[in-house]
Amino acid sequence: MFRLRGLILIWLCLWALPLHAQIAARILLQDSPLAGFQYHAGKQVWSQMQVGDALTLIREPDNSHDAKAIRIEWQGHTIGYVPRRDNADAARFMDSGQVLEARISRLAEGRDPWSRVRFEILIPIQPRADKP
Image 1 (cartoon, rainbow, N blue to C red):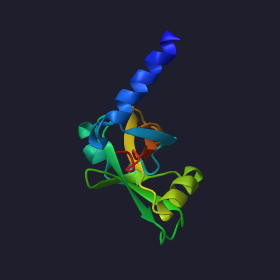
Image 2: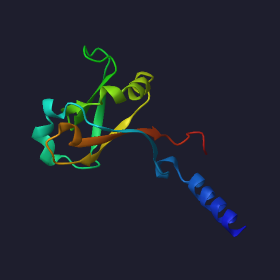
Image 3: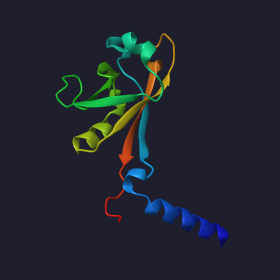
């Protein structure tokens, strides 16, 4: 009974917070290796990149190699693409207007360009605006 009261109290406290003070939540859509690292600016900016850095996803529906292509940029530098085998869901979300976030989840030294950078794509969950 005390546990239930505590949970209710926590819920009421969180519910009463203004929207800007509520905890931002995200759903992990995917975690993937970066495709094409060796063909883009990844080598030039490698020493500056850090785990947790934000990435920009840019949809390229007119890409001649893949109609579901999503380019990945780090601070304005193209560093690669979402792998073709993994891009269908993210492309569908982006095409429907869903905002997606991305960040570096792992950096590793090595010769294999597919193992250098891993990234996550996240779906941000917006707090409901209809709360008083």
